[in-house]
Image (cartoon, rainbow, N blue to C red; front, side, top):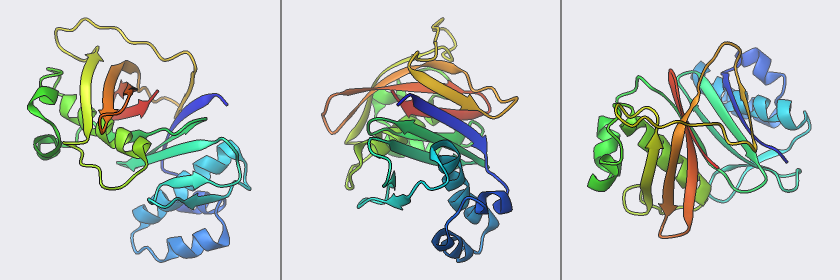
Length: 215
């Protein structure tokens, strides 16, 4: 299947509920927060818009979302600041989305090594690095990993670096579907590693949002 990244504003609760099962509606009703209900229902609606209304959605043993009746389909989901990102692929994958305005200073101190902090001079780097580590953690699909010790970033090539002069292009084998009027262009690539394993490439997209996903 063509790997696809979809980024959308969270749907209205009523609109998202139209795609939900009875069990999902009951689970959503238990949340007192409207935003939490929209998050819970919204990404499920997005999955079914892409894969079909009958797509069966569940969680695996580590709490990651899975589609149980579409052989070979893998997904990763993230939501923040009223937006949802969905990554569909034919292999395990990971995506994370955050508002570019969020303060990542505490997260950076907790999760980045000194070497990782020096990978980029961009003021957006702490947020990009955080999203990258979250995407790698989702790709790993196992518990017990420490974001600082086990999930590492090794290289960064970013057009957002003040003096980098780097260029970036969307990977040719990725379909990208953003909301109308929204621009989150590709600005570079990262290379990371999970618990000493093989290198993993990630794409970085920045606008009002930061989106980082595995390649």
